[in-house]
Length: 161
Image (cartoon, rainbow, N blue to C red; front, side):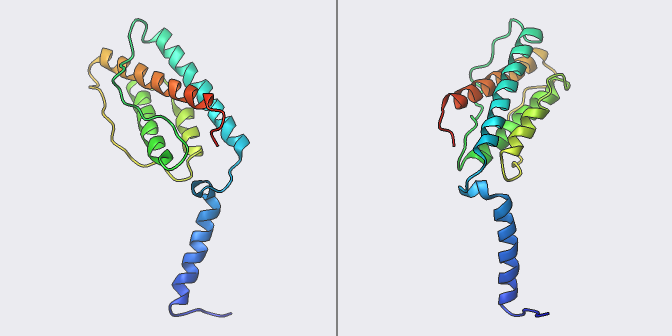
């Protein structure tokens, strides 16, 4: 067995680690990913986000209008994907928390994480006061609507990959 010492040892370790990381996260660097799997996940996100929005609008937020001033980042592929997915995940987790888990966004957040090679960042978002039910419902409805609209817009673009 040959033991490498000197400046080549860190280089070999780095090469092995980076090689494994690139193999796992190749989609972040423009290598081909399964377009079928990506399109399937995006379709699931579109259907589930629309269903959650419509269900919440009918059952919990009837008569409440979404807050159009809420700035929710839209999902995107490319350089800003990790940042946008991180923010979307934070908003969806806040929706689940504010609703007392009646709006289950677990599938949405899992699918977002699945299409992001790296773990989403922890980002801070503006949250409504938890004591005001109307504000909470408006926030939840607004997030669900914006995310649903965003996914519908993304699906409208045929050439996403």
